[in-house]
Amino acid sequence: MQGILINAGLDETEAKVYLALLELGPSTVSGITHKAGVTRTLGYHVLEKLCWHGLADEVSSKNKKKIYTARHPHSLLQHVKNKKKQWERNLSLVEEHLPDLVSLYKIADKPVIRFCEGVEGVKEIYSETLEAKTEILSFCDIEGFCAPEFKNWTREYNRERTRRRIFERMLMLDTQFGHEWMEDYQGSLKYNNFKWIRSKDLPGIQDLGGEVNIFDENKIVILLLKPPHRMGIYIESKILANLLRTMFELAWKSGILARTKRRVIKKTRKIS
Image 1 (tube, one colour):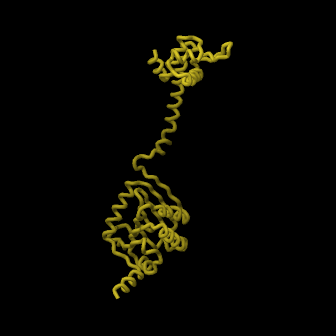
Image 2 (cartoon, one colour; image 1 turned 90 degrees about the horizontal axis):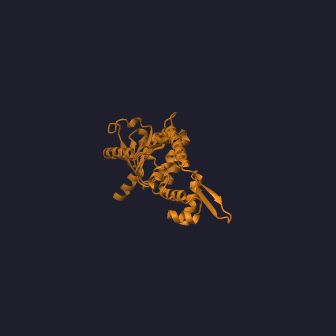
Image 3 (tube, helix red, strand yellow; image 1 turned 90 degrees about the vertical axis):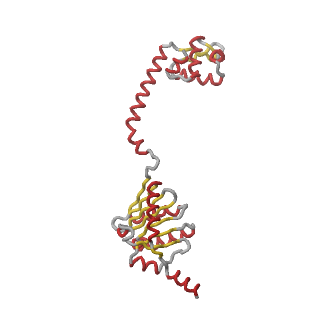
């Protein structure tokens, strides 16, 4: 009989206590738990559950001891029917909200994507790179950062990155503007390594109009800097990060080492 009760939805202890109630009739907790072979503390808990399920009732004797009695076994049938109705409601609820749950489900490498628009949006997304735990790899069209809206802010950003000792290898678009910017570069040389990349070596790079950063194991920051479509995009995806990292390393091999005036002067002094 215990197996039947378990199949009806009771757990093993509930089944033992319920069978004891059926066999004993109205009884004290001590008598019921002794018959069922469970502890008194557990017995109290189980009896309360059986009452809540409508399978037992609590009554008081003259000496005020708690007396429990089983309801007619027909109540067990009603209990199972109630559980069936509840599960049907649960099934309907899950089916209704399944699309919402699926949209939240993060598969092995389902990209996590966040984007912000406008100048402040670009700054917010770009600031994610200041949390980098590894070297930052960058494809960059530097012209967009020289717009008045970004010029002072990028100087502050570079100072903060230097303070945090975050290294960056940067492939910059080989343009006249880029060379002029490099001649007057005022940032840290200790935490930067620059190379020029020509459009013939990486087709499509001339249309970048911003910057792509790859860092840590799975993080990508994409900045679109040309108005009116200024936007920052943050992506977490190990697969995409590895793909872009591989492209960067291939492009880096064909890049041309970029030197600032300060590097040239330093080298000249060393030779003399």
